[in-house]
Structure formats: structure tokens, C-alpha cells
Length: 142
Image (cartoon, rainbow, N blue to C red; front, side, top):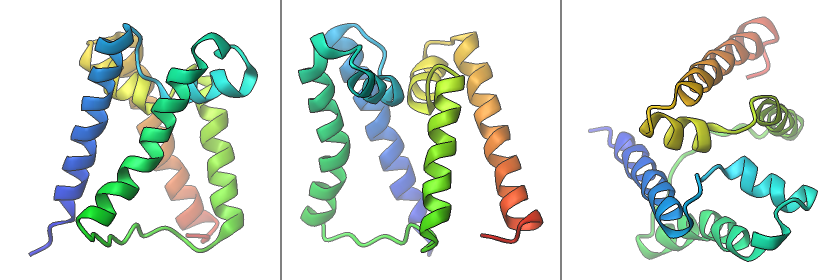
């Protein structure tokens, strides 16, 4: 029986719990692009320690959990490095244009019933779907 959906459910639960802990801990909405962007552009210097701890947790927790449970998952990620770089740049551009990412708008915004968060998430999903169609069916890259 296929059980990959369980890992998606567990990951989503951890992201939601992280957002709740971040909000309860410092009264701010968790938005990964805003947290990272504040470190990169220098606007988040006064809270740099908490931002670095958050980012370290995002990076280290999956590594720790996978090593504890000896889990190997297939991410279905491509080996095409230029495509990965282009995708990362497009995601970064999209988060700048939308003033946030799926963690801030999707996870935290929808849970607060924020109209802006809901609208942004709908457009993220539509843009992702259109990108997949273009890359897979028009360009034949994926």
C-alpha cells in the first residue's frame, strides 16, 4: 500500500505547529520568505538571532528526524541543475511580488481567515499549475 501521503501529512502538521509556536512565542506571523529576506537585506537585524534559530530548525529538523527513523524518501526532484536554479529564482521573485510565501500566506494566512492570504494562496496554486504545464507540455523540460 502506498503511504507517501503520510509524510506529507506529517510535514504539513509540523509546518502548522511551527507557525503556531512562532506566533505564540513572539507574536509575529511565520513567513519563511520574510524571515530569510530580513536577514539578507538587513531589515531584520534586531531579531536576527530568532530568525537564524528558526531557519536552523527548518533545515536541521528534517535531517534529524530522517536520521532517527532511518527514513529514505523519494522526492522526485530532477537532476537538471539549471532547472532547479531557475525554479528557485522564480519562487524568490514570486515571493517578492506577493509580499510573502506559502508559509505566511498559505499556512498562517488561511488559518487566520485572512482574505489576502487566501487570495495569494489561490494565485500561488494557479501559477504553479501553469508553470508545470509550460515546462512539461510546452517546453518538454520536466
